[in-house]
Length: 501
Image (cartoon, rainbow, N blue to C red):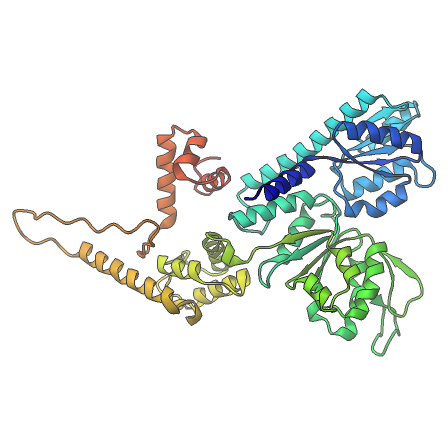
């Protein structure tokens, strides 16, 4: 790595660690003083002089704490506090007040304030309180992340333990609790909507609706009506009022999938509506207001679309406040096997009889295939195999031909034939002789080469974990080193095998 790249990484790390404190106060002299105190203490500070302006931009920020004046003209401090807590319940808010009345302070604390500081501001008190609030907020987020990891899955309904997925989880952790607008990139079938749903479930809006809109599935002539709604009689066929997706998502989350497929005409109308969360229904004269969090997604490179004149640059910067990349399945390693097993359980649970198994030969094919259709393609293949598999074992012949082509097929069939020959040799009865001839040991397979017998992999895995527990005398750190797996993976496997409560 070059020195320039290393310096850039270190600077990025410092920027991520440096906390952002938002100060909302109409006293400009006090703002200058507080900003100077906090910046010298190592924080970044962003200042607003009224609650309305701050709340309009809260969704585009990820602050670590807020210092809020209790007495401001227009929207007061208590009302601003309530709206902050409605959107980001866990975000610490420190009240700044010149009012010594106990009732005012108690009212703020009852509404969820973290602490309060009485004006004139004492520098030591300010720095200590803000520092404690930031540490508490970050530790709370870290604790929620660890609790989620111990459960064995990154987020609800998202399966994956590979390095690219762990990086995705880390990025999701950064933005889940906020209202920041997100653009999710990823190939078709990677699970962009699952990512949006997981962020919604982890946010303060999870009690509101989650409204999904596939922009590619709507004819251009109906896009505006579907998004903004329409009034009765707005056009031929509009026999009644229709509530659009923007309005349906009020107090919740709106997921706009394949946003690049929207027409340029609608993109222009969309820009202001996303910015102000205000719009008109088609054929309507009254303005409609809707408070929602926006998560957009696309499989296209939007910057390329902007260069080609197919997507508005101003709209791109409006929706790409924070960007997430969902990795394709071919880059996720052992997640392929993990997903296949999960789909096997999901779809077999709808039928009767014992749970089918996936032969190691099939696992080999699954792990060497390129997966152009990503997770969705894998899910469809497992469903197909369950319908035609015989003897409760999914074999290579049950797979679509496209998975069994080229060198991958030749390798799998060669090793499978050798494994079957070894099985036949082991099953043959011994010769009737008084002197037992020495038996040559079976040739060892090269490290990492697949074994193509149909094995009970779960039983073998349990046995390995039990043996490691014995050798390590129950020390989980030592078990992790012996097995060569992560601690999170170990916790999940201990739970699945019922080796620990």
